[in-house]
Image (cartoon, rainbow, N blue to C red):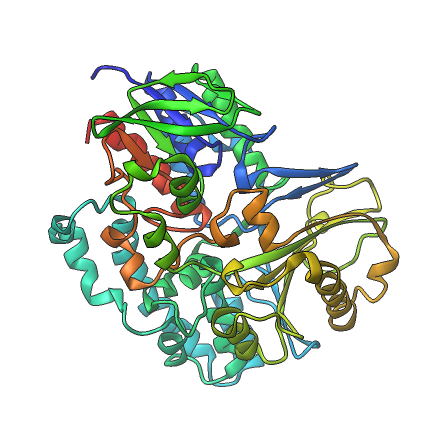
Length: 493
């Protein structure tokens, strides 16, 4: 097979995965990253002596990452120190009622029966039945869907009875569990896709199964260490990563891409281009309007996008004795979700996720101090919210909620350094269309072949990776998108 020069725009998880596999197979890999560090939304944020992950903090479905390392002849354990977490996380309801899900099936069933009488056996039934769905659906996420013929393959035909695409995650899992708090505990994972559990297709009940079957891990140093390891392997296999090198435009000639133009004005030519930028942002900024027949500016505006997030990165002079992962639910969780998805307004009482990773990982902050990461799901930029005006008030509201509803009663007195990212910042500084941090919505009409294709439809020699293409958002699926693109390039598909 002739070796190719492959240009990758963006050193995020999908681009790094593709680069890692292609470089190992002997292709000439050139990655162009606009930031000064690799990782994209999987990059580190450094504030003095404190280190934070920019985005993802849950590492799940470890076998995907392990397989990618193996495909390059490496052992994941030689590059990453991984800590399993048990309990998986702490869920707090009504500002005081705690539930600690475990990856241990027997322990979890017993805990559920104690906390939610009558639902212990229902949990085992859920694991069995939704586990069958995972076993059928997961193979479908490993292959591209470039046409309707993809649906005729045996793996997809076998999955059809289990897809359950027309019910919602909440509707499906409510059939298992009687207690409302347990229903929320098993369906809030729809937020990993930036969607409401009352709208997210029931296909994605597999998210709960992934957590409860395979567990959740933390790499020492943060999930950004995965990106760092991938970049190292790319270098070991002869690939090159150009930092602080933004791309201005993708060159399209006679219906195919032949390279890119850098912001410096330099042209770089290659045999294939992989787009790892946010999909809609890339279309509206990197591809000329005359080169887009399907994904016009009007089409991009009409597509449905995920919610956004407000992020607080807090370097504290104190270490709180609370779990690694904490979800503090709004007193009225569904009303909070409605604010985000339908009313497109800011909740007075939003749900808050807190990562207290320093309780597990001493490398993130000086001794006796901690790097605390706070994520608040909010509506995206289609809301028209003026974040310059709302920024401080919303930040203060979130700090107040944490102080009121958690053990961190004196939080405001221990903040040494902090950074805030709003939906406007996601859009303007990070290149995320409408600030939709989880990319395109995962509604039925934007999944599989209805999602932008891994081998891009608009012009030849172009491939997509990341949350805006198949299989979708979330680190395991983004890694899969990188693998799919690498296999298609290697096989000339």
